[in-house]
Image (cartoon, rainbow, N blue to C red; front, side, top):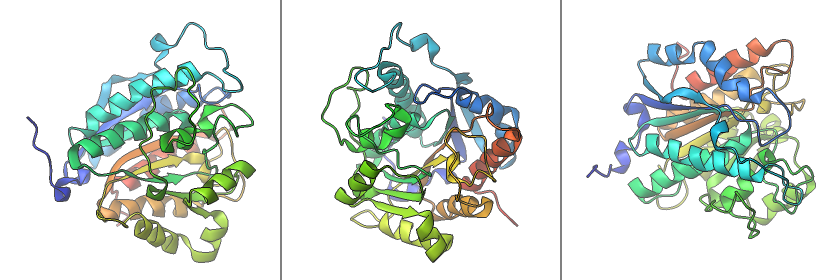
Length: 324
């Protein structure tokens, strides 16, 4: 039977192993091309870059996953919710893929793909953390959007705008395909950074559940260094101040002038350095267990190479690439 690690052992960076899952999936939103993100990231040499950093990389099934063999034959909307069965089955499989890496003590890197995939990535990681440490997973969500609409509040029906509500368990409505999801994230264990396009109902949800959220206004006021200090302080409350942290990074958190090849760009976002500082500061905590890099869409914009290059750079920064 595998040894249950002590908290001091729950520092995956010491293991120097990264389990990489390529999620070529676009079903949580309507724009084509986001499923190409993993292919372009691998073509940019990410695995070779991580190997040069002395990581051993393990690519899930040694391939990019599009999951199409698991798609249902029919996936009509349920109410306003689009492709619920497809999004549900992909995330259920993805949750197990992430869990398989995490239970072995590997860092888990997921390359997307749209942000609906966070239902699976965080579910799988939370399961591993609970089994190995009997602790709750903490999450930092870097995004222009809150992605916390519910089936009752969504105006679009696109599930990439709802993953957080499912992870927290904000709806009792059972929707076919999504009814397997077990809430695994407590509101107090979540911090947003970079918000600037939040729906009215989402604002009410954030207030109701007292979720810590830092908007671009807050970053302008305090500076990114202070924001990260407050973030880590918030996620260090409770009986386990060094509990594991998962980073879910939507590339649209960056300003479109920095990374424009994404489906829902919003002006006034993070600079190149602010984005990298977040990743570097999280690495320095020694608490990182997983990273999602999502919503890179090479089919959008004339400079998609820049967005892909920046995505790779953010990944390397999260895993400890030194500036000196």
